[in-house]
Length: 126
Image 1 (tube, rainbow, N blue to C red):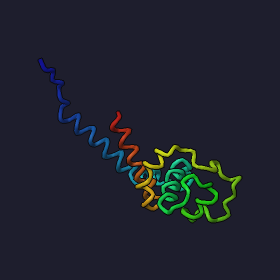
Image 2: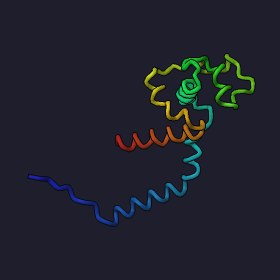
Image 3: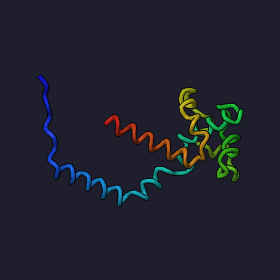
Image 4: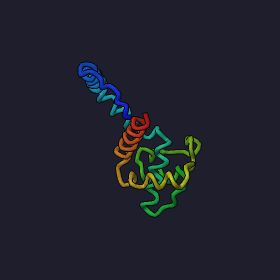
């Protein structure tokens, strides 16, 4: 015995598509801008810098005050150790391994890719 759930009427599907189009149209540019936040996102910076360190032969868990200026020029402007919220990468090696392909990209593109991938996984989970 199979149970077949009823399909939504065509007009409800159309209504949801119009709502989605309106949201994407009104938030589109800002949404992408939000997904490309710069270095303030210290959590992802740890993944990306660790991947860059590994790709360049530097220690993966090198102090951020040393390795951030090498990989992100924005940090080359007088970065002080006491200004850092996180001085060393606090993530396990498996997360560094997951971030290795993103280390091949520029930081902003890597962050955008990471955020879109994460958003896709959240939507898939829902």
